[in-house]
Amino acid sequence: MAILQKQASDVGKPANKVTLNYCNVIADQFAGLITSNPVTYENIDDELLDVLFYNDDAEETSNVCLDLCRFGCAYEILYFDEEGKIRYKMADPRQMVPLYDDTLDQTLKFVVRFWQTNLIEENQPVYTVEVYSDKSVKTYQSGPGFASFNLIDEKPNFFDQVPVCCYALGQDAKSVFDQVMSINDAINSLYSDGLDTQDSFSDAYLVLTGQFADEEQLASMKQHRCLMLDEGSKAEFLTKDIHNTAFTEMLEDLDKQIWSKAQCVNYQDEAFGTSSGIALKFKMLAMLNKAGFIEQQMKKGLQKRLEVIVSGLTLVDAEKQWREAKIVFTENVPTNDEDLLNLINSLRDVVSKETLLGMIPFVDDVEAEMKRIEAENDFSTYEGLNHDAEEILGRA
Image (cartoon, rainbow, N blue to C red; front, top):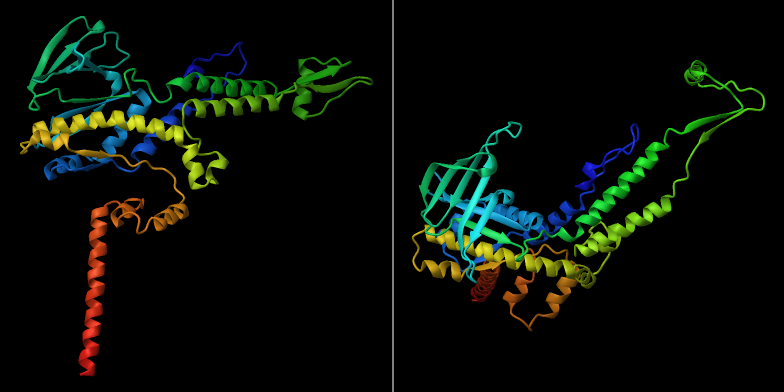
């Protein structure tokens, strides 16, 4: 942040560096809205589901979404572990360079991953560079400026395609807070300058009028906490009027601007918690629209992930497995339970029970819930028949 580069204008003057990280909060809120409820997959093979479960897919996908919101891009590397099972792990976007061909399809040809392997304090940096292709994964060692590359390892790639999933927010790959970074800097600067002003006058100057005192006398007055003044002299503190109203109004205005420009809801707004269900949806409309765009971009990467996994498995109709897979996002949107229940009740006999059950947030598996209801109805019918039979036999 720009505020961290701030320096005092003069020796002895305060230089507060307050960081109110709105950008991080905005990224967290978008990621939470999209992936707090885990992404689900439908119409896929059990073996493919096992791979997702083995990789803690809910946590991994949530972290991918967070990187996507923070950096505008995210990357996953797929590989086989020591047990021969397929794994996928995130990689730092700042260490990844994807390379595409020049066709309209922009097919991914290579991905380069690099990182410094020796201490940053050392004069001559040493880098490890990995190059992923559809045939192999090559590891090189390089020095300052990447002037030369020494091949130190090469492994075959069993996925038959580049084993890296690339996620990006549109063609420009910008973070969700890219447009509000300057406003965040302005808030930090304003807040820090306000504290500087407060600190500068927290120890006010004492003005002695008509009274002479040397350093020894002043030290004695300070130690004994009393003043000896001649007749006609006076003592008073030199203070500065700080216009807190203008300062507060500027901060409030910048605060409103940053949430509006980021198309993000401020959940700390008191009015937000008292809004009805319909009002909540209107307040969150811009945020939900932006979240929908992020989900669409994520689906491309998740679909690619399934494609690479399937290429590493021996499945029947392998291509069909990932092409027909349905990836479902469920936004974690605050709801008014009373309004929702009234809506569901009003739709009885209008839409199917299965559709109504799908509208209930805490019903995760509609099909399983339908089976449980059916079993309960069968049991109730069985008990009723039993009771009727006992009555008939009793009369006989």
